[in-house]
Length: 375
Image (cartoon, rainbow, N blue to C red; front, side, top):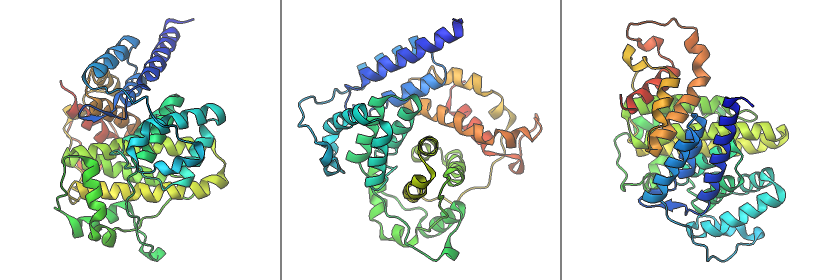
């Protein structure tokens, strides 16, 4: 066995062991949510060593971890929907879903949960969806069960666009322009993203002005790519914490939808994907309004030094961070940039500032991570 292969297997085993240990942690942590499993998976995907994974877990356990309540009343499988929006049910529902997966597999539970309740990707400030995506990426049943339990118990439903004539459907960028024109500059109280999103949902103007965009029927990639491009532009423009979660949340949505498209037949996707895409658009729009609905700025000029480091060099820096948002943002930007590399490769490398008409999303993802990480 080669040294590289042995290293990869050791890293995978270490990650699995640490994710198993994380199953004892509560949904929330000290002053935050339980980012630990998401950060560890992102670190692993960015080629962190087994020692680095153990180091990250140890510091999280010491500083932030809260252990989950083990004295809980069991939830019967047929009653799982009663836990919708009941965050105190998370430990019991996590166990219920874990047993369900062990007996019938991941696919059965995914269809049950995503098909029976309205999809709410903004739940837990997008963290439930991110946790689900990462769990699916590494195939960890405990993480998938935890993520689905978090989606249910932390369910944050947002208004959907009112049905309009098909002639009124628009692109997401045009829809943001409408929201900015009508709702720019509004402030929604509370320090937490979920608090702000709930306030947006209660604003009658959000329901009134929320446009309807064209949704996917059998392939989600087009809308997700459109939203993801807008998200990284907003993050570059605002440096806002909410816009960071829009970037990582869209990456998670892509992972989940691509998993569904690989694993499920087309006739099921025809029903399932539109039920996921409409709430995804509403969550994105609500987050945009929560951060102030700023008019989307023209693409910037990017100086050469912002693009000087390549991804391997940036990832080597990212894996040394203990900041969970820096870790996840670096991973999401790296992965999302791959969708635009053919566009970038068609343009010549240069040492002069890259002008707005030469910018593509791959540049923004790279420059955003470069700006985030210390020199």
